[in-house]
Image (cartoon, rainbow over all chains, first blue to last red; front, side, top):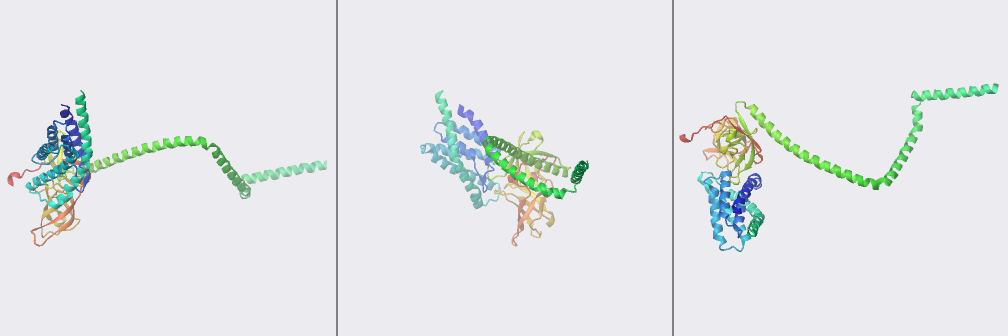
Length: 167
Length: 276
């Protein structure tokens, strides 16, 4: 139950931090997706049971903030969630490696979906420019942030479930 | 008697001379001569005083170090406090400058009414060029209203809630603005890109575009008010075998550091979608 309750303040805080700080910290034109890292890290913790709810709230918040059409974040985060479910059963003993792998996968998925959406909106896209100036820099920033975010979310999940077990 | 008279006379003479010298000294006639005497004395006094001061300091230093350290600490605290105040004042001044500039712009266009808003965030997707502002329908902001600053056109309202709104910048890839280059008497369309660069396209090959020419909104299409500055031409891309020429544009506004904007409240964009 606590997992559901704390999801709101943590994800809202994350959305605020992402739109005010992290969207301005750019390498070339790429920026980090803090929300994606946060929900991946939460989903990878062995004790969390309502990670799907975190994905849903995160997608809702991002859809509210971002102009990405077609409820893009529901699709991106939904696919990511399904992929995590698929992987957790197979490589559950390597969460840090999985975190890095899912960060790469999530960033590429996000870029591919956004490019696809823009393409269908008849926006001219120079793929080479997009990959070199947005996707790869975003990936670098996400990978830089992946480990600290994983550590923080792991600690939060640990303290939450330790408290739950004690009570 | 005679001796006594001589002695008195001598005394009187000395008295008169002394009084005379004093009067001469007081009236300034003896300044040069007196200086000759006084200067060495003052130099000696200075030399002596300096030595005495050194000795005094040598004796009293151990006691003063503590007080000096305390004083130094107090001064350092005061300096850091003042530095904080300076930073705060600089921030206030910066905000005031922005607001004054916006106010000046609004006064320059009395026909239009504006809603001032602060930029509170940026779209998290690096592919999209949108910003969030702190004014919504409660403040009179409506969908599609143009957004400007004192420097020029910013974009239009893309989505709005009661207390906030999302602004599509003119640098966004799906943004299109009808524009005019007055100096070249040419019209075109400003389009953004995923990398936030803007270009003017669909310009006739006959138009003579040059770097530095100012681009303004044309008002065609009814989406934006006319004669709002967009930017300057950076370089022209003209190929003989193409129907139109295009040009890269340096936007008038620095979209990376956008802090406050004005929503044009009394402009109602025309909906020409049924005609398209």
